[in-house]
Length: 295
Image (spheres, rainbow, N blue to C red):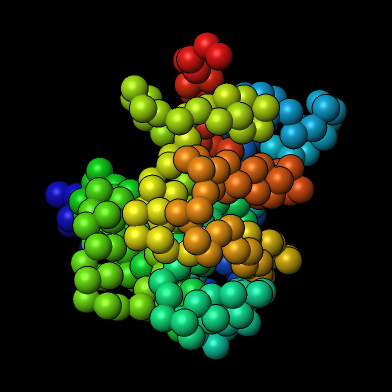
């Protein structure tokens, strides 16, 4: 039944949205914002709690402004993901580009792979067009959706512009295979969401709160000595983004445990504080805030 709904209803809808001019696309986005924020009140409690807990603003009035701007932005991201399926190579290259891309190009010249660390900030769905900006074969690590039919549909959209998707459950083995086959690659990873609590979980202060964080990217980088870079997405205006590339470490094995993870989390926090309205606040990031081990 779900397969029928996906292919008969959802897919044609996405196809239609992907063909719309941007001015009409954002008209529908504005309507959706009003519906989500004022009528459905989608995850309003979670968003408000996250904003208040992170203290991105001391003013209640400003906090509400950030909240509204976030909902406007996230509906844009939602529609931009659909638009990604129909946008041309020429158009996406005008609207999404890299600054300091020479850092990645220099690694390729020296036959070095790279791990790109991003965050859920800005128009992160358009990262999947990075194939047009790097000489490496691009892969993105993602968490598969529980609904297989929707997962297949989302993958179809994200793969439109040449990048590949690898399940996070298969990432380590896949990277090892790429290295053994001597293929030049970049792996994009996003590690700013809440990690599971285990005996070996690493806890880090993030936005003023001690939370569990993912350390897999650092572990993989050290295991294979792959250079690791931070890619900061900056929203220039509606439908226009640039990505600022920064080297975190060209030689990860030289760093102490969790040092690279700390560098990454600190940069994500700085990115959020600069433009809090563009972060993914609907995620329940602080759900484990009272479970941190005593120091």
